[in-house]
Amino acid sequence: MRVTKSIPILLLSIVVIVAGCSDAGGPDGQIVIKVAHNGNEQHPFQEGYEKFAKVLSEETDGRVTIEIFPNSQLGSEEEAIEMVKLGVIGSTASAAASLGPFVPEIDVLNFPFIFRDLDHFYRVLDGPVGERIGNGIAEDLDMIVLGWWFSGVRNVWNEERAVIVPGDLEGLKIRVIGSAIVVDAFNTLGAQATTMSFGELYSAVQQGVLDGGESDHTDLLVEKFYEVTQYVSLTQHLYLAAPLTFSRKKFEKLPTDTQEAILRAGRLSVETQRRAMEMNNEQSLLALREIGLQFNEVDSDAFRKKIADGKVYERNAERVGGQSMIDQLINQ
Figure 1: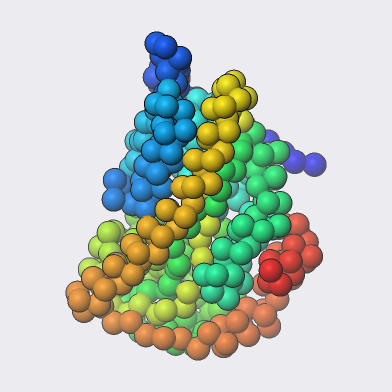
Figure 2: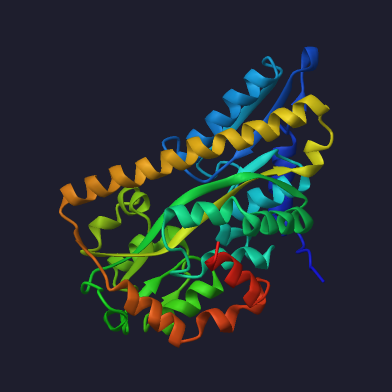
């Protein structure tokens, strides 16, 4: 049985404010759809939405306009998810970890070291596992998944020492994404994992409260974490997925031809956004190397063995749909 979470009081006030400028039709059948994400104007999420808007405008002869709200202007990822669920705004793209509290199956994507490479990651998202998770999102959150965007490959960084084997993580206080599976995995590897707010990470490392964190190259550069860290270990432990979601409440009120245009625009945005994220990561890595940050390779087999011996997958299988779900992902 699925449990639907109640809407926080703070979110209700945001909904009231946003509803005052919510999506609406204009003269001559014009439709304006608001979308939101937490990246800035240079983030690949923005590029993905710009492609989405361009295709949708072309497909509808300009009848449908997309208004993009970056930088969490309308609220946090979780608040944007609730607004899409309620039909207050049309769409949001958010990291899979933000949907975990609502759709437990999505956390299967957050098992560290479960993806072999980027091609494997994309095959999973575009295959039966991605479809099954998308169906769960539709059921739990009343949203349509238009496609799966890419939110980067995460690596461990810290100020103390180079991490090459799991033992090097022993005792290090590391901030990780808000997934119980990731917390479990990092504790199993020997770290002291915490899910401190991302916005507090810089000052926490600067003040010695934490030793480091894990992020993709883009965040490492944009958030200036290179100022408070020295060692970046290329663990590539997480490939982050970001479902591009659309409100089903809003979708069902639109004309059939507009619905078809939205589905097509969503599909076409995927390739653009993924390539933008890949390029962004590569450019950020080059910039970080020029700054002088120290990068090191890791013993990936040792990390995978530690996770396996610690039974991280088995211990968390039930929450993501069972061992069969994990096996299906691995064998995709």
